[in-house]
Length: 130
Image 1: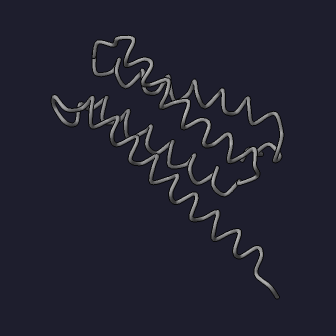
Image 2 (image 1 turned 60 degrees about the vertical axis):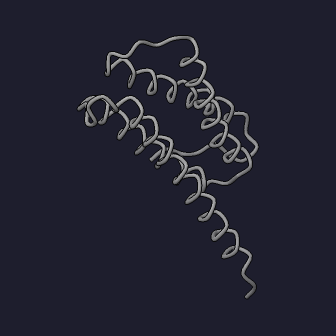
C-alpha cells in the first residue's frame, strides 16, 4: 500500500497535477478507442472535468480528509475502468461516446458523495465524548 502525503503538504499539488493528467488521458483514450473525432471544444471540456476532479482530491488531501480522498479516488478509478470498458466493447452501439462519459461522471459523483458522508461520520466518531 502507498502512503498518502501529510496534511498541508506541498506534495498534494503534485498529486493533483498527476491526477489531472491521468483523468485527461483516460478521457482522451476513451475517444480514441471509439474512433471519434476530437475538436478543441471537447479537449477543453475534458480538461475542465479533469481539473475539477483532480482539485477535489487534491484539496481534500491538503486539508487532511484522508477518508474522503481514499473513497472518492477508489470510485474515480472504478469510473475510469467502466468508461474504458464501454469504449473498448462499444457496449451501446452509437451511444458509447455519451454513455461512457456520463457513467464516469455519475460514478465519480457517487464517490464524492459517499466520501463526504464517510468523512462526516468519521469526524463525528472521532469527536464522540467519552
